[in-house]
Length: 202
Image (tube, rainbow, N blue to C red):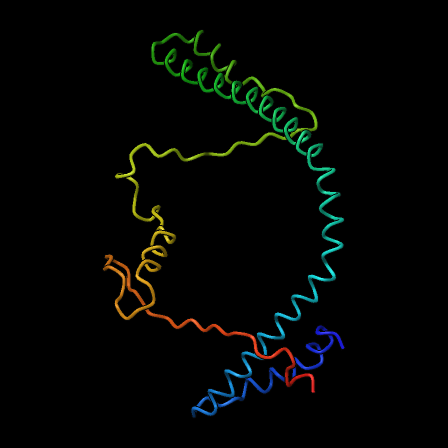
């Protein structure tokens, strides 16, 4: 029987056992740890079985990917270049429109109605036509003074906190105090696999 077939047939039974398994006495805990090690053994065997089936397919897939990789990258470079150039054409048109609106406002304030009208007409010019290609715009944030950014737009550097916790290790002494951070010591359970001939094969 393959490991896959074994697990498919035994998983419901094992799940039901674990759900009601008591952990009140040392004997109970010993039984639980033994079951955990048996499960680790099955996980390892299942992964090895999967890899054995996948390896030939993966090798063939890798060869195909390698053959197509550079042509695909060439097309992606061409696509990126074309998109960049088309975007620049539209960006230039948008800059011209903005400049025309500013010129119209300035001319109007100066009482030069003819110049204001001409600038408005220029600003109303349609964008460049790119048939079959849609162009949309988005706003992008550029930080100019980080000290003025409201708190709600700040994010916690979770990776930095993880490194602090990692440096402290798993001993009883908590990591250094950081305002606004509560350190909680959590258990991590690991298990080694048991004898390859498991009870679940019986």
